[in-house]
Image (tube, rainbow, N blue to C red; front, side):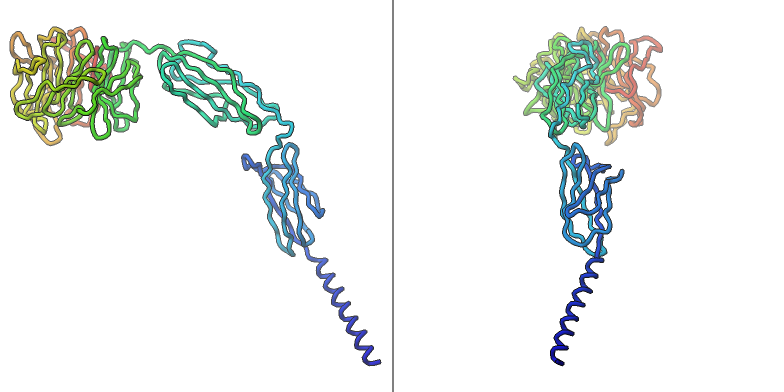
Length: 494
């Protein structure tokens, strides 16, 4: 009997413990929190329905895309996020006692019954329009039946070259274009995508830009440490011809060739280039023998009258080369090893003026040779100070240049009192012209105007830091100095 009592007591104790554990488990709950975002934009989504399996409470996300489900019995669950127009997403989660579990849903748009955007209509510029500015805005219209976010890709080409420009991931129904080619016919097309359907293409539209204006002045401006070539018309309106990211200088226009020549940095050396009047079609002329001398800023070259050939220096040698880069040949070498820095070719082709100097730019000589390299006339013979700017008159009977009459020489090639001189081949002597220079300034880079009644030149303070200005002045006419362009150097006027 005693043994039977022990067995009954043990069974009662096991049942009691089992019932006690079941009551404790029934009181174990946890919490699930989460966030729902758009899988394309990662922006929060509001009013997304959140349900679970096994079933718990049904909740909806707030404006921040967040939700909370409280008092969930511990266990394994599958939660689902549902919103019309989006693919439902499932996420598994383990709910543990007195803990918060987190879920993030990324919902993607449903492609079922989604319609593509309409065909884009190209509205501006009007198809086949002409005389459009080189800075123009493209515009188009398009709609999406499902109000999907749209992105655009624009293809642009022209009849001047084979370049096809592609502008991708455009969000607005417009695109600003800058620095287009003058006088070019452009063709453009828009592709629109809603991110769901196949992109939709527009028809091709075209427009023609305005012809390049008639200009005669050329000069250089310094932009972010680079020499940049500009041109200007008689009204003073300026047009940038070369990139601000390139170092190009010493422009020379040839109306017969209908080209502009210039010097440009090419790696560790400098070369002669040509381009159209509007700055397009840049081509390198010099090759294995570059233009070179004691200081690149003071180098010059010369075009023959027809524009078919150049002459240019390479240290102590003078070379001739055709405008297409062929036929390079040496025509002269200095007898004393001095460097040739500047040269000019008379319009009739019979004279070549040379400025030669030592390695520091001094000990200057100016003399004239014929195309065969024979010295004909000595103009300056090893005077102290700096000399620059050689230019023949149309007749070839005069040569203009500048000379620092102070005779000052230093390692920075600073000039203190550079004035304009003219050599007369008939009289056989030089004399100062344009005598009204302001004290403390330098006149440099002098050239005859097209009618030779005036001079063009650059004037600047002799401190070497002040603004450079492009001036013109009548020859022998008092008070005729006029500033044409401020902040400009290396003038040319053809």
